[in-house]
Length: 80
Image (tube, rainbow, N blue to C red; front, side, top):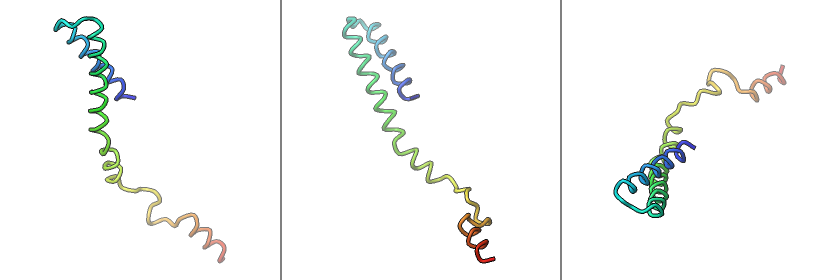
């Protein structure tokens, strides 16, 4: 969602720059569409592998190794 918003802002920026340079209205629209697609592609490429790598670095906190799991506790209750 954030990437889509950022790419739209990038598209508007490229469209405004095209108008400043002197492009016609229809040309500026197509340039802004192309700019938005390029920005979205760059964002997608930069973030594709980062999420999986970051998740792999996170420590597992549940269940803690000191506490028995639910199945172990149930097995201990059955033997009593």
